[in-house]
Image 1 (cartoon, each protein chain N blue to C red):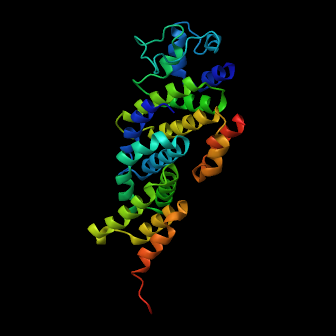
Image 2: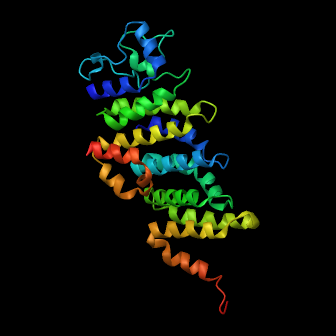
Image 3: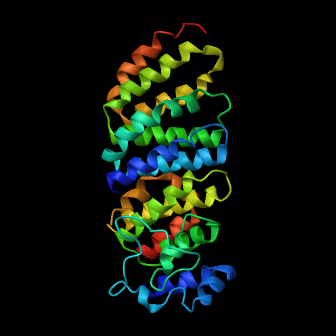
Length: 155
Length: 140
């Protein structure tokens, strides 16, 4: 989970970092470790944080919010799904969040949302070891460098 | 993939299977293919009910680009692999649909789709060849 923390820190925009620092919270502190941290989503989905700023321990919910600009958050989730070891629960929570983003009107950022969703769906099987079957059968994946990169990491 | 997630995701993806935005249409089709490959049993029923008609529309449309047609072919392939029993149904509906609006259909695309379905389910080959060979005229 430490690499997940580092990756998320580097992907945050300056504004998001400033927001988090304003309340004195390290955006992704070591409290995000799998053994001690509260899961990023409860009851199968991300909760919307109260107010403008995240409460300590709710940084992940702050990133995966539904309101405002979510482009940076999609990049963070995509990057982490690609680079870090993630759990099935995290993947399912992110799929649910990204699905909600699809409901938002307008085209802006939708391509990135689709790419994020593709990667998350692949990660849901990579963790169960069926990835090789998927790679063997899918001609779609040949032009998706991010997916191939993720597969290389996972294997 | 949890079924409740699929039930939420598929109707949302379906909205993008239209010719209004070709780029997003391709992405949505890719995701349907991926879902059919990753979770065939749970995805198949939803896709058959919600999406299949729209993909027929893509196959018929003269506006369909090569890249989109390739994705439609992959979609039909994944659909037939998810449930072999639908293969005959797909061939039947693809050919029957051409009779309704013959001028709005690009026949080479339909032929490619039928061929893709038969490639994935060889049991259909004899029947489909027999059906289509009726229309061949000697000497042309």
